[in-house]
Image 1 (cartoon, rainbow, N blue to C red):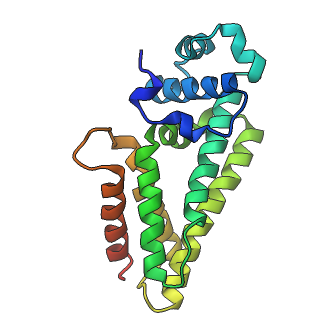
Image 2: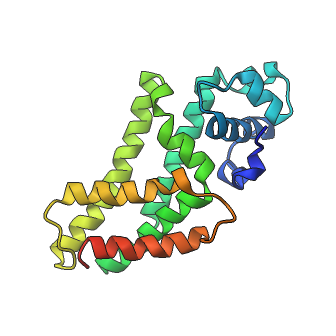
Length: 203
């Protein structure tokens, strides 16, 4: 069985979740969903990975889907915070910093990011609606940076929407292939992708 610590420091991702037992459930669920996929994972699997009884799941969460929703909601909010925390007046520097932080986040938190990006189809319509709104805000943040660069004459982008999707796709895909202990650290990946994006935008 794959354990959470083999993926990433998940406790840091969920540090604001309380009580501790609820946090342990999210840690276990994120690792299980990333390793097996949502549909192949049972609540018994999650409870066993958390070192708790199956009944303990329902003390804190209504269902397996509720666990997925909390992971998806918190994961999206965390990555959005990474983007919106970047400030500065120089469009190229701001874009580079944002891409570096966003790509690094998807490497460092690749377990969470895999679940966040690839298990959306399992969410109920109300939960999906809430998560989609967070995704729209993420896209808007990146699109705004591209637009600022175009307006300042720093970026040469004939299709702002297409360029925005390209930037997001590049960063998000890190979660699919990244493995800890490889040649590049999350920070290395962030620096590489920041340079690639600026070249792509014609900075």
